[in-house]
Image 1 (cartoon, rainbow, N blue to C red):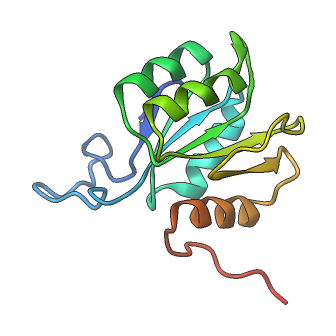
Image 2: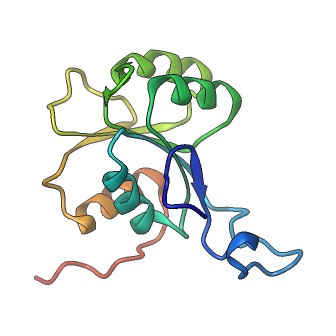
Length: 151
């Protein structure tokens, strides 16, 4: 696995890393997440938080995201609309056509222009890792991987 997160699907313990069991995949039921963000640091943080409970695919451009959304199915799309080749918000309409069941999480430094049905919004970079995980796990209905915040 490379450190370049452009269009990588992160699956720890893969054959490339030498840890996969032959004939067995712990990821068969893991929800697929598409993270669309030009920020490689944000991609690394999100993947670190979500893998192995999910399969995270990261792309950094509107063009790459559009192509993947036409070809593959995702349970969740995490989107920072500030992309180098256009406004990622334009993906939302097409997403509803191609993947009506996908949840959407806008994770952005700017406030959302519109309400996202079946999704949410978190401010970037001020969201804590715990809050990010809690939001994603709620959207995907997956179990807690992080301990609860102290009271």
